[in-house]
Length: 236
Image 1 (tube, rainbow, N blue to C red):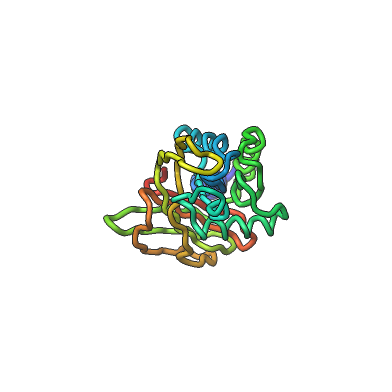
Image 2 (tube, rainbow, N blue to C red):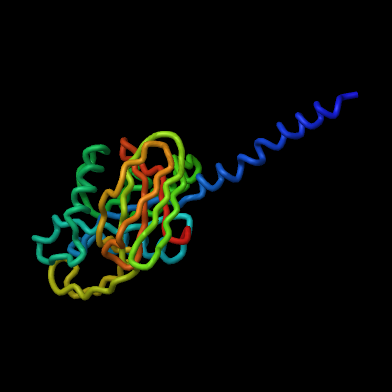
């Protein structure tokens, strides 16, 4: 008969995977980041905007963000939410994917580019990102008054920590340009984005002032541009 010591050792070994499983699950349970590059001056963009609005209102497994670019501003209507940072971010994606800058474009988890109005393609990319579950570290965001406390957990690899401020919803009456005469409804409109730290695999704690925008998100971007972490206050 096996000794008590052997039985105890076997029991301890059998419990190791169970004790580690919740940690792995926490790291993997983060939203897929969906970035829409759009402009109020683009007549092809409203269907993509409507799709992002649906994601923002009905999905908790994705983090949808609308980045309004500047290069449409000289073509009849200046988008009040356009940001140089959005144009520059899309330009970096365009060089990496080899497809340049266009609207509407959706980038899923920093890994693939799609025409923003092609819902089936984007949904397939979201599902693929969920299956692959590329998460280097868990991110916890705690809102404390006018400050944010951000904890990036330990893990493998490195990345840049980005702080994003966004507004939940805007309605804009467009007076000129390709969408002149329309009223556009847009959700999760990005108002600011900036790097706040470098993660090198060890746990990292950051304290930051609230960015411009009604809400915040934090993403972890790997050196190759892929998103490997994301979080919002309260784990939303």
